[in-house]
Amino acid sequence: MRFAVALAILTLAIGPAEAKFSVCNKGLREAKVALGRFGGTHWISEGWFHIAPKKCALLIPGKLDARYYYLYATDGAQGTWDGGTNFCVGTADTFSIDGRASCVARGFDKRGFFQIDTGDRLDWSQNLSD
Image (cartoon, rainbow, N blue to C red):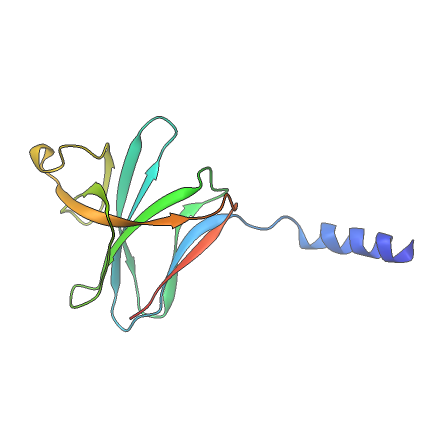
């Protein structure tokens, strides 16, 4: 009984885990990262998130609401993390783009993003390494 009470007090003291989606740059150069996701009614891509070497950045604060997320990243030199799912990306330092179709016709670049399966977890941390 004492163990159960102690465990309950410890659980309340710790509080709920902070849910989030973050990316950690394990490389030696700054990474420029774009995120693609389904926003509930439509696809969206957003970026650029600049992540210093050996640092992490929070891309989505709070509970994750989807199982799959998509990333594209580059270090501007030889390192590119990409995949086979196309999203639009902007040429400006920051962007938020609705939809994945007709990127070039709408004035955006098209990049292949890699898929991340979070397994319906409430938070996720993705590492980028050389």
